[in-house]
Amino acid sequence: MAVTVHFIDENCELNSHLLSCSKFSEKHTSENLKSSLLEITENWGIRKKIVAYTSDNAANISLAVSLCQWGQHFCFAHNLNLIVQSSLNEINETREKVKSIVEFFKRSTNASENLNKMQEQLGFTPTLMLIQDVITRWNSTFDIFQRFVHLKTPIISALSNSNRDVELTLSDWNTLTQSCDILERFKEITIDLSSEKSVSISKVILYSQALITYSTQLSTKDLTPQVNNMVIQLKLEINKRFGNYLHYESNPLLSEATFLDPRFKKYGFQNEQSFKKIKKIVINKGKRIITQSRSTIDQNVSVPAVVNNIGKENSIWQEFDAGVENVVQSLNPTASIIVEVDKYLQEPPIPRTQDPLKWWDNNRQIYPTLYIMMKKRLCIQAASVSSERVFSKSGQIVSTKHSRLLSKKVEQIVFLNYNLK
Image 1 (tube, rainbow, N blue to C red):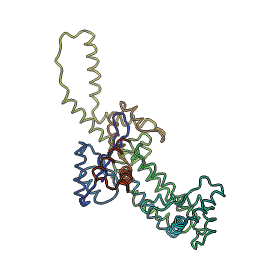
Image 2 (spheres, one colour):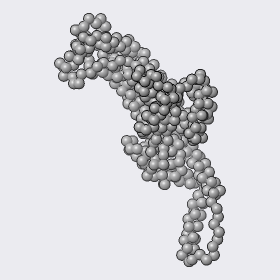
Image 3 (tube, helix red, strand yellow):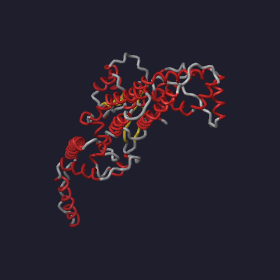
Image 4 (cartoon, rainbow, N blue to C red):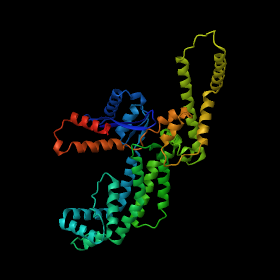
């Protein structure tokens, strides 16, 4: 089991570290997973600092996180994978033909050489190999289709010189082309939300809205029967899995992250009513932060002894400082956070391509309460890709050459490899 941690440091930079990657020998029950998660976070002294846990939709891990009493976000990339995998079943006839042709070129040295020769004759440089499908990852299917469309002419020429019975019809080629055009949008989103080095959680609501709209627009296009069925399935799955993200009140982690991203603010919500509800939630949470902060200060600050022989200049400044303090203290927590939120919203959003954390670093003194809230929201990962990368790295380390490494040694190597990168 691999557990990574993500946080925003004092320099307002996003950090990612591996906490643990160890063999999980016990049954994968919710109780056992909960115990393991609590032990790992206790060992690092961060159990009470966890604001959210990003995972796939598995019932056991979902219940385990709930038992830990942490917030939870289901991996956007995982859900996207399930959506596209389901829709690809609708074009399975063409997909199976493509798979068969790929296997033919992989098995036959002569056919593979002929394909390379055709590419050279047609000016394809460099020559490319066909890609094999990985059943668990839809994007590998997209890559196969894209490569097929790119090498359409060399493939047709190479197949015409072989004894292959299975060939792609005009309808199949249209299905491949149309599928690539449609699925490219999904791949772009997957890549964007899989980055560990940039803020991603605040884009989930926007991407959900965009995909729902996109799937509706696709219904009006002139498509092959197979692709049309794929689009119908896409629309059903997108609404089923992402429609809930638009119920803002039931997804405070996502809603607050969108609100606190200076690129989006109020523009991340579908309507004014939804925006006002989230604004109210942010104000109420900010009020509690200010109240708690002032209470802590009152408890920790000792009253200095009064000195009678203060000079004239000092007593003037003392009077001034007291006046300023009285003005600040006169703003109750509700008024303070309302002023802060309104000022934040009055500023125009920054360009979408800019780093929101750099903006917050420059404005932390202006919006101190929102800054505290932001650090607990924009650190959340939209996808659980980090832990999957850990497993990929583990697989590379435990190769045939190193198959005798003890599990403890593998854990140590993986830990160092991830955290010293």
